[in-house]
Amino acid sequence: MKPLHKIIIEKDTSFNPIWIMRQAGRYLPEFREIRKKNTNFIELCLNENLSSEITLQPLKRFNLDAAIIFSDILMLPYGLGQNVKFEKDFGPKLGKLDLNEILKIDESHFVKKINRVYNAIKIVSSNPILDNKNMIGFVGAPWTLLVYMINQQSPKKNLKKDFFNDKFLTNKILLIIEKFLKVHIKNQIQSGANIIQIFDSWAGLIDEKDLPEYIYVPTLNLVNYVKSLNVPVICFPREIKNYKEFCDFVKPDVISIDYNVNPKKILKEIKIPVQGGLDPKILLNDKETLKKEATKYLDIFKDHPYIFNLGHGVLPQTDPNMFDYLVKTVKNY
Ligand code: CP3
Image (tube, rainbow, N blue to C red; front, top):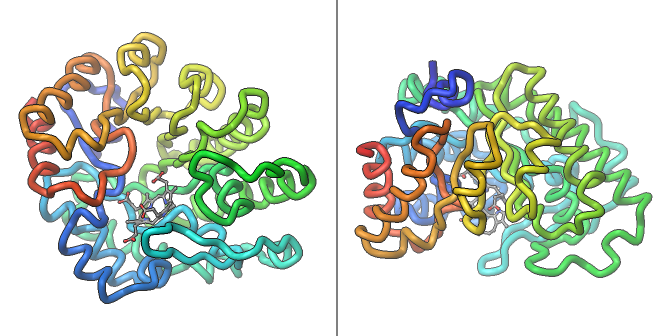
């Protein structure tokens, strides 16, 4: 059985698997080398030879237990025909959202447009490096994708004031997102993904009263869909106010926690396997601090099914030697 499955299905606490969000990315010089020559990020994601190579880069260096496909949550709006660009020092910029155009897209259009992501998953999952490791596919959660598609850029701290004004549009788009996320999940699994993670990066932005409609119900629908395909599903509702309530409602197989939550409180309240938590900024410190902070999480979750990870993506300024030290600390615990 693959390492993450051992934790999730068998609830094995005798070892500590580790993978890291954004493990394939800018902190690695070999990634920056490829990125320099490929300035269009979407095209890079759609180049299966390069994106499969990038996915495997961290696994060649470090003793990680899973690969996560090098792609982006914004491949979904891209597949739906919305323009998506990544600008240096700005982040994603999306084109105008045209409901009439999106309504013309059917499943075969969508799959054809982003098919090379699935080719990359096939290439990676058939590599012998993956024999004893998991292959993680992922999607953005409906809420976070709705935010990007309507806001057309990162919402940072504030959503457009009139975000919910056009209820007809938001509800219609939410249903379209949900429909195509299922298509995207199904194709990733058919190509070799054996875990799905759902990233809800902007879960913390929503008012409590809107949680059921925009987060709990749509995410539950996706979680049930992944489960129906017999694949475990990890949810990362970043900065959500109440992780316990989220878990009670959505029932993912694993809950990934951000670095603002108290891991002891999570241990007390939540019965399902837990992932992550450590603040990515700790990797910018010295080795002693890193070891101390990583060990804190390992101690707290030593008798609970736990997958080591960070509380958000690894930062671009991280020294790969510190990353290596973290992996070794976890493995030698
Ligand atoms: O984790 C991995 O190694 C897999 C690849 C992955 C990427 N994006 C590659 C990427 C994953 C899982 C994502 C998810 C993603 N993408 C999220 C959810 C997780 C999170 O970070 O909260 C979000 C919100 C996005 C949208 C996105 N993509 C933003 C806001 C940005 C710009 C911000 C930034 O970090 O530069 C991206 C670009 C992006 N996606 C990069 C990578 C490696 C950086 C690209 C580059 O400029 O080289």
